[in-house]
Length: 196
Length: 137
Image (cartoon, rainbow over all chains, first blue to last red; front, side, top):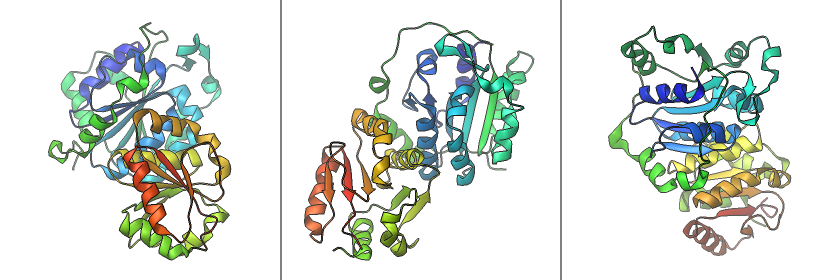
């Protein structure tokens, strides 16, 4: 599955009251629709640290979508996420060990024993949900998994190399702070956090 | 000279800035000594960038917040200043020394009315405001 297809499938299973934070210009260009739930950042460390603050003040689920190579640059923020112990923060990592937006250059990830293992040892629950999206699992099973997520969690999705070239989106024109802020503060929307 | 306890009470109770995030720095020792979970919430961060992010995240969600960082790290966080400027967002930054040409700045002195006017102006204009605490003991 390519990155844009993975993005589309993931967004399908997120709820109307989930906060979504997207990082990286490539992902921002590929995301199908940018709505009031979303805030976009060019850098993953900014997106991740913003999400920590956001998760502390809202009960809504906060999803950060980033690439595995971005995660390398912002490894220290994962420590902060882990230390925060917030159950409503989730990092969704789309990875293929390459800098997809910069000509597909290889990263050092292939030399690392296990990124997932290292993230787990920091203190975040780690899962690889690639197999859920290979076509064998139905929508009901996938949505059940997404509904029962409890953080702080890092979810990995392996994607195939290759991007869809689209017209560049202007980051700051897309993100309307007022609309986003109103959405976050809207308590009538409630939360989709799983209560066992 | 400004007493740290009075300054914190003014900031937390009168102006309602109760969410703080930062990385420990020797210039803020008087402030750390007066902190209390009764009237404020302090999040220690792994780095200055993260402290900024945590505070901006909280304040976009509607909680007035303050970043406490060493002045030498202000220039390393220019992209956060840029972000706040572009989306039109107000946040307070506390530093220990004066740094010019980054954002509107004020040295905290015993006249709290000037401070109140400065903060309300930056709030109205949706700007980042920098408070310099070298007089706070």
